[in-house]
Amino acid sequence: MAQEAGRAALVLTGGGARAAYQVGVLQALRHIRGPRPGNPFPILCGTSAGGINAAALAVYSADFNMAVRKVAWIWRNFHVDQVYRADAPALIGSGLRWGSALMTGWAVRQTPRALLDNSPLRRLLLHTLDFSAIDRAIAAGHLHALSVTASGYTSGESLAFFAAHPSVPNWRRTQRLGVRATIGVDHLLASSAIPFVFPAVRINREYFGDGSMRQLAPVSPAIHLGADRILVIGAGRLAEEGRQRTDAYPSPAQIAGHAMSSIFLDGLAVDLERMERINATLNAFSEAQRQAAGVPLRPIETLVISPSQRLDTMAGHHRESLPTMLRLVLRGVGAMRREGSTLLSYLLFEPGFTRALMELGFEDTMARRDEVVAFLRL
Figure 1 (tube, rainbow, N blue to C red):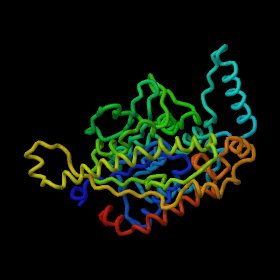
Figure 2 (tube, rainbow, N blue to C red; figure 1 turned 120 degrees about the vertical axis):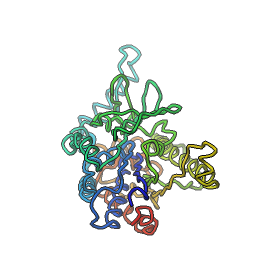
Figure 3 (tube, rainbow, N blue to C red; figure 1 turned 180 degrees about the vertical axis):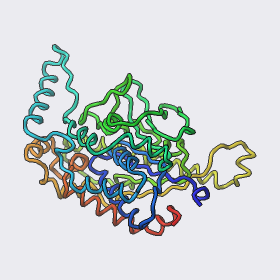
Figure 4 (cartoon, one colour; figure 1 turned 45 degrees about the vertical axis):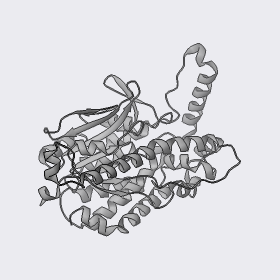
């Protein structure tokens, strides 16, 4: 039955605190599957915060239900200070460093690394995840592959670091490649290093930042790793919003939020549209005709679940839950206003917001229960 169904892959995109939505989807998947043992997604691919979720699922891949429970517990109880320092000394120090760099950097060549210190996230990941369990899960057959994508600041390439069954080879395409690696905390921190917000991470000979940057084909790693079916969980609405008239000049937060949405959402929408066109073309011919013509491509079944509501609007309802000093800083750049709430939605690691996203993810998935049942071959 498993061979007939083919390998299913789970692709988790980036989005900072928005990735809590993915956990709600996972909870719905667990509910729909019921008490079935094993792991329905032998291939796990993640980017940015989605890479962290994917790695957590890989560590506990022997029992999908338990994996989802553990990940959900963390997201339900998240606080900002578990991800980055939001205390007064850290925020004031960051402001002074950036101000000093802008004023005197030409003389002393001072280069601040990031606006926020995410060392608490490193400690949380090391305390929570046993990374050695990933290779053990692959050896035991619970997992076929895990990939975490990051972007190289020197090469400009999108690298999918992967741990997988020995049969999976490295790959290279234009500006993107897959490299076998022993996945660890540095890969997760590099993949989730939002530019300017969190510091880049050095892996081997290069510094890496958020994997959503220059990720031209977010679904591609799953295909290279052998997936026949792909479930994609987004962290933002893929549908276009209508244009609205405005006379106010955009705030720094509004500009930053627009840039982040371009990084996290646009590549996925384009890749999915491209895959639909390829599938339509391939399905016009039988498998025998494709083989006779020497076409190595195969149709890929895809299911996409993304938020039915605007997450920036939801973030605005929870802005007051942030620590006082952080609220003051964000108010200064316009993130506490309605038009700046997109930036806020990426940084709002507080229970009120993350739980609301989890509930939305659960509801959106249950509303498409029949599609999920068909995809999971239940």
